Length: 516
Length: 88
Image (cartoon, rainbow over all chains, first blue to last red; front, side, top):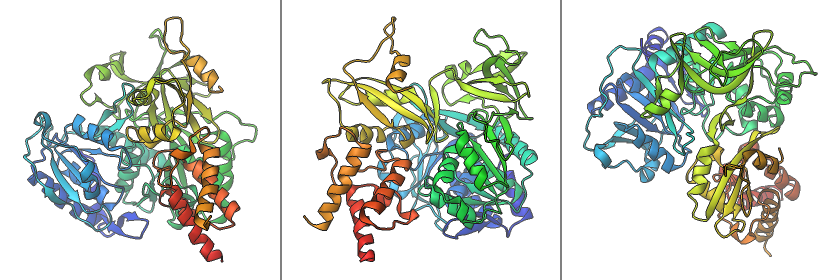
């Protein structure tokens, strides 16, 4: 089975039911979503897209972007979502890295698109006026298409690639996590069993499509014949507006990073509206500050709450149901819970031995939802797995401990990756960006926990002329190379950076300088 | 000093003190983007709106606390001016 089978089934069972709705009231039914994605899928095939190809879409979140995503799957290709708010240089790198066979994009992005005839790569470009509820993709430019190198996909295989999600890479370049139809289906089926989803559910689509949370939103909603309510990028960060739309749109299933819920609890005026429709609140991507979670559950005492944990490489791999009310004396964040029933997990210590109960170890996961690896990075892919008991386990890099009740507790990272607003941020990628600045001689970045926003990133910089640089210049420069959530919150300028005895940057001292 | 330039001076001084400590004031121009460059993050935008409401005694709607209205000093001053004309 393939992922778009969920849409074919829904269109057969509930053709008149509203599938996707935007906040301005525009919508498509399942019948229309199926027909429109068929037409665009046929168009992609006629332009040369073949099974096994990758197709990028550079559109803002909309009915059209969901149509496009299903059209790409129906054409037998894998979709590659491009962040419409991301820097053009990064987006162009992603499209070139996985050598998309075609790009569906809004016309406003055409001037910054750098797809050209480099190294035998000739993507077809389909431009739409503006992605929304009513527009249709049409071919604006049909370039000399040549099929990509990896035409290996079979017609029906769940092992075929369904999408590639790019996440922050420590070497300064984003890396593409490859997920197959089977990977995503095993997760969606686990969700169906765990959350008792139904056709009367109204799902929030808060996460951007390049973020793995969107896999739950889109495919769970379509599998169950529910309605997916698209929340655009412009509203996604505004706590008052988000709180208002959850009530107004009668959202029943909410899923986001904790930071959005945290801001809503503080600034959303949650006591002023009726939230009786909301029955399930899911959060994932970072630690939820316990005081804000307590506040949220005070305003919304009735829904079920789940803390979901998992990297893009496995999607959700552990879950914990939060019991409410949360005791006032509880000061620790909630645990990440137990390994999901469709997966297996082990904890590995630094010496490669399995950790015992109560001991710390790196969480490693195997099972049908786990990625096959990163696009075009065979060595990095290999390093990310460990073979134990004849099975290949993905190494999450997260250090956890199993508590007496069997729940896993997140303790921290073994490397320099953090989560900010739910997004993965490799501090090394920020440093690579800073080193590109012509006035910077040395740069090192540390992250510190912050009660209000989860994590704050602090850049310590030595300029070539030994003086402080303009913050405006620093932030503007960063915004041209990395996504906004990766831009450091603070900059400090020094005459030199502290070093260890082996002449490496002394991050522990930098953390003390940052006020840790 | 016109209303508009007085507003800009007050808002600029607040942003420099609160979010850009140590910055050369000359580099914060009426058209410097602030939201799209991360100078103002979500929390900073909420703080800025609370400041504008208090300082100029104007109500700002939640949907106006966004990039379109707060990205530059120019946009912020236009927002303040439009609110003041309603209050008067």
